[in-house]
Every structure is written in C-alpha cells, then in structure tokens.
Image (cartoon, rainbow, N blue to C red; front, side):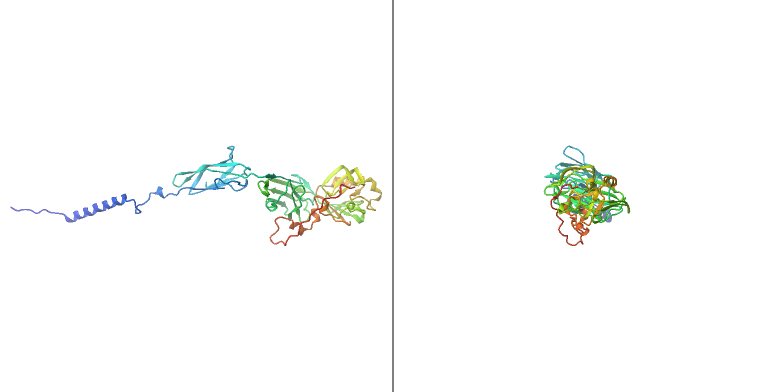
Amino acid sequence: MRIQGIRTNRPRAFSLLVLLTAIVAMLAGCADGGTGGSATPADKAPVAKVTQLPAVGAQDVGPTSPVSVTVTQGTLQNVALTNSTGKPVQGVLSPDKLTYTVTEPLGFGTSYTWSGSALGADGKTVPIQGAFTTLTPQSKTSANTNIADGQQVGIAAPIILKFDDHVENKAAVEKALTVTTNPPTPGSWAWLPDDNGSRVHWRPQNYWAPGTTVNLVAKLYGVDYGAGAFGADDLTLNFTIGRSQIVKASAPSHRMQVVRDGQTIMDIPVSYGEGNEARNVTRSGIHMVTEKHEDFLMSNPPFYTNVRERWAVRISNNGEFIHANPQTTGVQGSANVTNGCINLSLSDAEQYFGTAMYGDPVEVTGTRIDLSAADGDIYDWAIDWPTWQSMSALPAPTAAAAPAPVVPATPTHAPVS
C-alpha cells in the first residue's frame, strides 16, 4: 500500500502570516494613546481669540479713549456695547469682521457692557462679555468764543477761547485745537493770564487777508484739564474775514484816517487824550474795534459820571473809544484835550460808526504811553511775534527758550471820553 505525502504551499502560508502580523500591529497602533497617533482636521483648527480695549473690568476710562473688540482666528458676530440704561453705543464692524470700533464718545461716570460672540475657525463660538466704567470728573469746564458762527470780522480779529475755569494742563487743551484757513495763514495760539478763567488766543502773524475763511475745531470733550477738571463739550466755529479797514490815528497830527482796501475814505480832524495823569493818555499801539453803541453812558471820576456819548466805538477795554464829543469840536484838528478817547464831530463820528466792524485795527501813534497788558483783554497786537509764539503751550521744537509771558496789571481806568 502506497502512502501519498501531504502537499503544502509554503510560500502562500508565509505570506498570510506576514499579512496577519501587519494587521495586528496596525490595530495595536490605533489603540495606543501615545504620540504616534495622528489628529483629525477639527482638532487642528485654532480657537478664536478675543481682545477687548479697554480691558474687562477697567475703571476710570476716559470718555474719548479708544474702545474696540478685535478677534484673531475667527470673525465677530452681533457685537454691541450698551450703557447702563441698555442704550447701544454707536460703532462699526470692519469689512473683514475682525474689529468692532466704537465711533462716538462715551459719557462720564457710566458703566458699559459688551455683548456678542466670535466664531472661531474650529466652528465654535466664544462669547464677548464683560464691562468697564468711565471716569467721574471732579468738575467739567466749558469754553466760548469771541466770534459768532458765520460772523464776518475785521482783519485784526483773533480767535479767543475763554474757559469758565482755570486750565492747568494747557498743552493737552492746545493739542485738541485745530485752526484751518483758506488761504493758508501763519498763526499761533498764546495763553494769556487768567481773567475769571483761562483764555487762549489764536492770532495770525500779520493781519488777515480779506476774504479768508476760518474754521476752528476744538475737540475738548473729555480732555483732562488737570486738577480733576475735564472738558465739558466740543466746539466748532466758522467765520470769514471781511474787507480791509485800518484806522490810522496819529496823535501829533490831530487827525484820523480811515483806509479801506488801501484807499483813504475818511481824513478828519480829531482830538486825542493828553494830560498829566497817565490814565488820560491815548495809548500808542494797535487797538481793535470790539463794540459799537449809538448811545453809551461814560464815566471817569472825578471828571464826570454817566455822560451820554454818541456813536461810540470801543477800541480797548481800558475805556478808550472813538466817539462824538461836541464839547471838543472847537479844538478837534488842533489840540489833544480829551481824557483818553478819540473825539470826533457828530457827523464824522456817525459816518465812521457806520463803517466800523468788530476786529478792525486802529493804529494809534505818537503818544507817550504804549498799549499793554494793563489796558484790557485784547492787546494781542501789542505783543511782538516771537514773544507771542513763546506764549503757546506747544512751542516749536526748534524755538529758543521762551521769555516769561507778559502779566497784566489790574486795569485802573474806567471808560473815558
């Protein structure tokens, strides 16, 4: 009996063994929690990161400080900032939806709360929340101007900002002031000594060109004035410069010329102030028309009290006027006998009165006392240009050391005739 041997396919058996071994190894690797594994795409997606300005919980935030929300690795959704009464604050979302910026000033002493969310690249949302509080000032300071919006003024008119309290941080205030002119006009701010509150004047280097348009933007709301005071509100002003009219007033000549756009339209006899008392001397220097009154009661004790004068044009706060005075008509053109003012006849005074405008320069020459800080609130043109520039709180970087500002004494004389 022949016994047949069993045939085996050794190559095939070996291949199956290798395959089974590989499968087992693969399964073991999938079960392993070590670093050898690979992450899914969702695990790799970054989480949205939100940054808020100011930081959540911030206190004493300035009402004009930058306020925004920014996201990286995501986009913003339904972002809003509301005040303590629930009123939304105006803001704008950037086109790429990465930044939301508040576009209006905030209130003083108010709590603001964020809401909304950011959608991350991982498909998950991150809530935008939290609050901050703005500062509460010890006091709020307002300002007003000497010129009305839309007014036309003379070629010597400065821009005057008068504050209702003292300003300690003058540089911060001046940085918030922008003057734009057409045509461009060189000029500078100068801080004059306080007069029931701080005051800053902007004056061109030379007289304005007729027809110049002027725009002032004073972004004063929320500005830190120092000593616990902050700006109460913003202020804007637009005005124009009228025709050129200059009064040439030479005391030795006993005459006065009115020059309009380079042409003399009046050349009249007058009388100027003279006398032993300094207060009765008409001041030499560039005065400026500030007021007009058809009738005005003037006093200069002990000489007179409440005398009615006609066609009175004020040119200085020390009591100097150009006005009619029938009592000096006989010496007008030949002698200076007044108590400080420039006296005209009734007809000449009325004619000049009709031509005068706020801001017109009145150039007085030939007297023994110069116009100065002691003579009232607008003596801007009595200060030379380098000194004027030095009185700015923001001197030019290349400017020399500034001399001390002129400090006015208390005015000593009342309106005089």
